[in-house]
Image 1 (cartoon, rainbow, N blue to C red):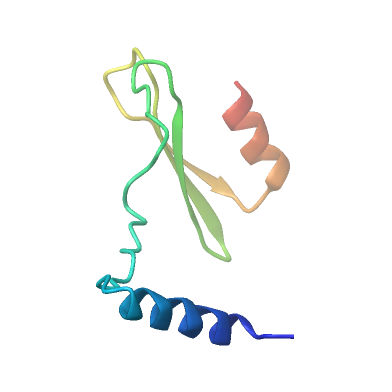
Image 2 (cartoon, rainbow, N blue to C red):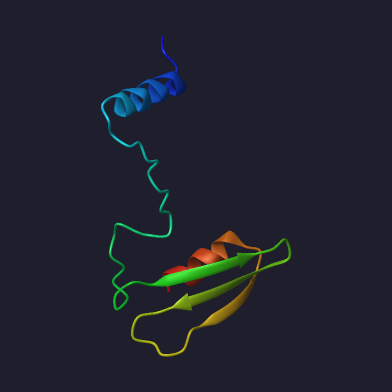
Length: 83
């Protein structure tokens, strides 16, 4: 059974033999293929430490950006996000 690396090397060699220029595909992690609908999407950012969690949010239709500090408690976080 051929390893993935051997398969990749073989396909590169075949492309070069055919006269094609092989170019690695860029790893584009900062581009999303899904459109973000800012007027209907709730965005929550959570900074977690061992002693507390800081929750910030961008809420559609609300000018201010709410900021809340919580004790380390999963149920309190879920309750905050669901309200």
